[in-house]
Amino acid sequence: MSTWEIRWNFSLGTYQPGNTGLISFYLENFGNTPLFLSEVGIQFDWMGEKYYQKKVSDNLGNIIPPNSTRFISNVSFDIPQAITGQRFYTIIYHIYEKIPNTNIWNDLGNRESNEKYFINVFPSPFYNAFITRSIRPEDRIIGDEIVKIIKEWGFNANTVDFPERISDEQLRNAIRDEIKKSDCLIAIASPRYVDALSGVWRTFPYLHSELGIAFGQDYPLLILSDNRVALDGLPANLRENVFEFEAANYENIRNNICPIMPAFRNWISNKKQQEFLNTLGKIAVGAGLVALGGIAASLLASSKK
Figure 1 (cartoon, rainbow, N blue to C red):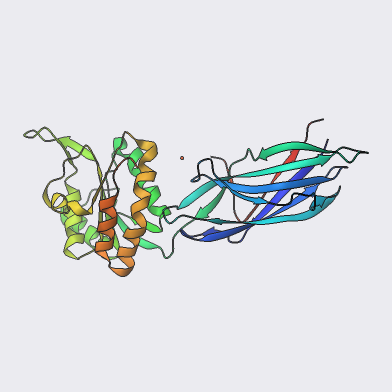
Figure 2 (figure 1 turned 45 degrees about the horizontal axis):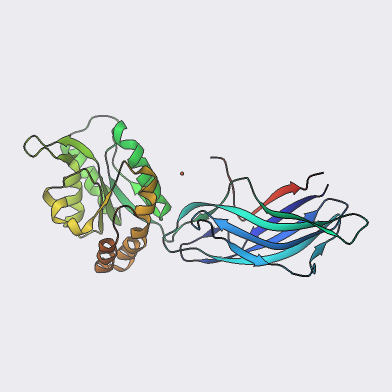
């Protein structure tokens, strides 16, 4: 039985969306028979069944002798612009072992890692975003997930939350001061009550006032609205800044929101509002640990007896 360990190093500890990266592979042979890798590659969670693959050799030119370590190959990869956060990957390779006292190589087939490994992908620089949201228990599941996505896109998520009761004037002043310290406002419009006259869902009232403060200061605005909510007032007049999501389609929330974030960040940095609105207009609704991450990792494997 052969035993080996594949090690790899990434060219960076943290990547940004749109980066090209490089991963270097090494193999240590702990056994008493030579080993040979014909292919090695990496498959990220955004790739489906595809993966970045490097054909090492066709003619046993990269044999790893017993009790030795050899460099195998470098594999390059591209990170899409709409990818961010903690991204999982799998290592895939094809390995052979030499049968003792013969010139025959036993094909051990394609192997892949079973552990969960990840890299970190975060934009730079970080911006301060004032988040208008409901913190009621029934809204927290979706709201917390959206805030997590916002943070992964290079935002410090700020809000105003007082444990004790304060006056309305103190609350308004605190909100205004916090918004002034922010670079933008992101509102999460979750359903709060059914309108008695129209029979449609409305969102929480203070969303309108906090949105109004930021609008009056000409801040970049993004309204993420549950598609059950019928917006009125200022949010309805800012329809072009609204992106709807389906709370019932929880697993797709990330896939739906991430494509609009690069353009929103660009609006903040360059004040190119129209570019953001054009991006938002092209995207429609419908479009989750124990893990090992960082710049280096490894996996241990063996052949069967």
